[in-house]
Length: 140
Image (cartoon, rainbow, N blue to C red):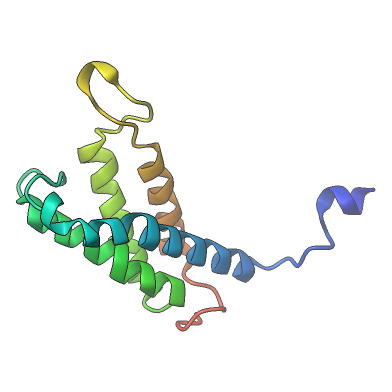
């Protein structure tokens, strides 16, 4: 019974966990966020939120670079720490500047929840510190 509760029949490998984390984060960011930004670039460019001292089209271009190029690198496990850093910065900007650190919708000020950005941020920081694992092109 203890073996079942401990799930000791599953392989114990941080490398499998890092592979699953990298691939899942990479594909979800690329397909659910990056692709939308590429397809809607012309309509989003002028009013895209981000760092207040940069124009919308620059903020959008930086987000696309992170969400498409760095996500693809993350999936492959190539330059993983660089990719994770770029994605963490992007999610940090989204959470702190766009969502103003709100974890729930703030109806009075029309601020949407940044919970998803915060979850992505924590996951990318985790990969920044752990690296890609052995199932990657980088193989640290």
